[in-house]
Amino acid sequence: MIFYEDLAIGTTRNFGAYEVTREEVMEFASKYDPQPFHLDDEAAAETHFGRLSASGWHTCSMTMRMMVENMMNEKSAGLGSPGVDQLRWTKPVYPGDTLRCETEVIEKRRSASRPEMGIFKSRIRTFNQNDKIVLEMVSNALIRTRDPDGSD
Image (cartoon, rainbow, N blue to C red; front, side, top):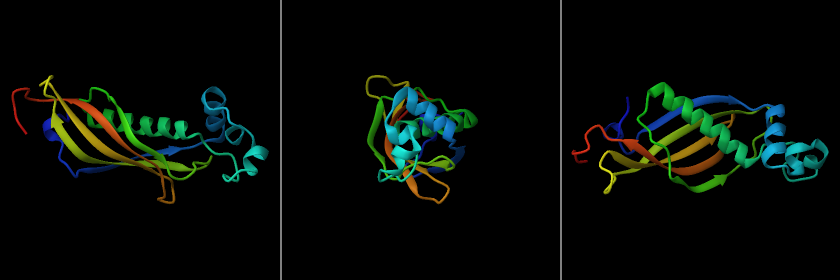
């Protein structure tokens, strides 16, 4: 199990291989982001995307799926997240793309009010099959401490 004390600033992890399908792009968009360039080939062709593209929110969801699968594989003592900062969708995601993630621990501290918790920030990047960044954000996460009375 990975606890707060096991996190080291600068640690980088690479994981995931998520295949983006046309059906999933359209299903997500129809439920949550029904803009024409996510749902209709002809409408998408007339935009700067040039073709059907995934919603940025769908890209976030696919990234989250890869992150959770990675955490489950590593048996993290994670306790959720109070949010993200600096979310950017840097390139479109298209059906047929294969996505992967990279995380880097950039900051950490113990909670002053909850000694059983630590708080850390990670820079998260999602790449397509051409190693182009399609999403970048800073995640704020909560994680159990192994020793609530310990120090950094």
